[in-house]
Amino acid sequence: MLKRFISYYKPHRRLFIMDMLAALLGSIIGVGYPIITRKMLNDFIPNKEYKLIIIFGLVLLLLYVVRMFLGYFVQYYGHMMGVKMQAQMRRDLFSHLEKLPFSYFDNNETGKIMSRMTTDLQDVSELAHHGPENIIISSITIVISFAYLASINIFLTLIVFACVPLLLVVTFVMRRKMRAAFLASRKSIAQINASLEGSISGVRVTKAFTNANKELEKFEVGNGEFVAARKDAYNAMGKFSSSTTFITAIFNVVVLIAGGIFLYNGKIQFGDYSAFIVSVNLFISPVMTLINFMEQFQDGATGFERFVEILDTPTEKDSEGAEDIDRAEGHIELRDVTYSYDGSRDVLRGVSLDVKTGQTFALVGPSGGGKTTICHLIPHFYEVTTGEILIDGREIHKITMDSLRKNIGIVQQDVYLFNATIKENILYGKLDATDDEVIAAAKRANIHDYVMSLPNGYDTEIGERGVRLSGGQKQRLSIARVFLKDPAILILDEATSALDNTTEILIQQALDELCRGRTTIVVAHRLSTIKNADMIAVIADGRVIEQGTHEELMQKGGEYQSLYNLQFRHNVQ
Image 1 (tube, rainbow, N blue to C red):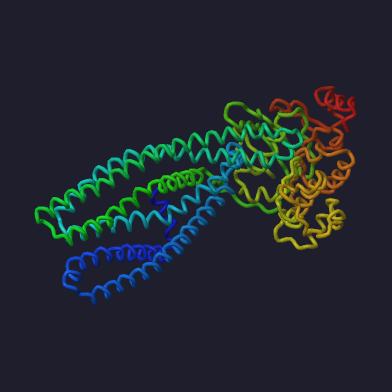
Image 2 (image 1 turned 180 degrees about the horizontal axis):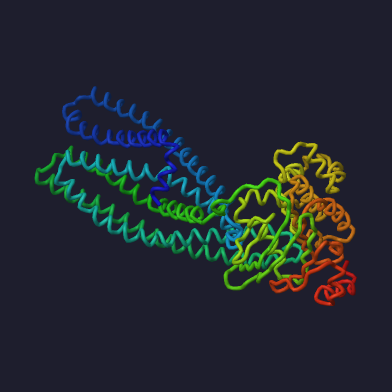
């Protein structure tokens, strides 16, 4: 863990060294005051060396001016080093998140992931800056202070330092309790972020159903856990701080009593005794710095642990020997495929399908039967439990994921659009496309005329998740994106089920154009939309229970006919 943390200092070695030198020099300058104080009390003042008093006073002032600039350097450039390290960690984390499989995001809430990328890494950044400075510089300062105090009176110094073991024992015992408490606190903050992200994303639903109080109740659950966790954390921190403060206060008592006895017995001069009292703070100050640093250390260490936890999550990886493919022909085969999301219940059980090149293949059946799962397995979003999936006769594990997915376009019922312009959302299908290609894709998706009616045209911002567009407009925008991608294989996962009939006709025209010349898998509840499919498979309870054309399935009088007649009896078309 420590080695991984240190690795983030490597790009900033020069700045780190300069920061440490500046902090060290500033600490050394701090020794100047007690040294000059001792000199004045023992020499200049008794001997009435007023000129030297002024000279040494001005020297001390000059040193403090230098220390001021050193302090600025440490505060500014030291923090900037921490920020740059934080940015690198955030970059690594984001890059890793982009490579994680779908299953990770199925099991981890967005708000909790965001908490690790923001709050946690902010604490890590502070630790990256202050950690070495507090540990290294404070340790060196303690050594310097010991040497200086020993030069005044070695015996008195040893008596003072005899309190250190007690301080170390208390620190060690209390630190373990603080570590557990701060970890629980960090988790509670992530829970609040997750609840907040969900509530804000669903605020329109909340308002529509007037359930603001319910959302407040849900939020207060996490908020209450946060208060309880912080209570434990601050309880542990309070015990730690009060105990260590008491022990450090003992140093002053020891100096006062032992020094007084030494002075009474003539073992130390008054000037040295006075300088020792002033100088003992050289030791107490870095000790207190280290003690107070423990809270920051706990925050930063806990944040880095949670950061590493994500980095250690296995990413999607191409199988050994996987190769890129250019433009696929589009022949898809599923051979005895079984799949389970959680390992306990099979969502698919021995599914076999053969989708010919250029064919429109429809999947129908009751909800939860496994249709969408099939759509997720073909682009290799999940790993099949058993069986295999082939594209053009090649098992998908032998194809790199990027080249496989470049050949597959997906249009879903729940369209995701980015908080960007219309043009930028369409360009997501092909980032290097020209403006003419974007416009051509929009025309084929029947969205160009609407876009041109907007004041800013293709530069119109559409809001978070396309909130400023209607459902049909969002769907056509997603279709334009796929037109631009121009994939060999198309997956339509209930692309029109949430639309009204008029809008559906417009979308269906665009989809018909999109399907032309491609292998297409259509998931549909409205059976009227897939009557002309080349092949239809009925999926129920994870199995293929029927397969054939519309006419063949209607003649069988099985599940498909029942579904079809039921829909038309209720006039659902």
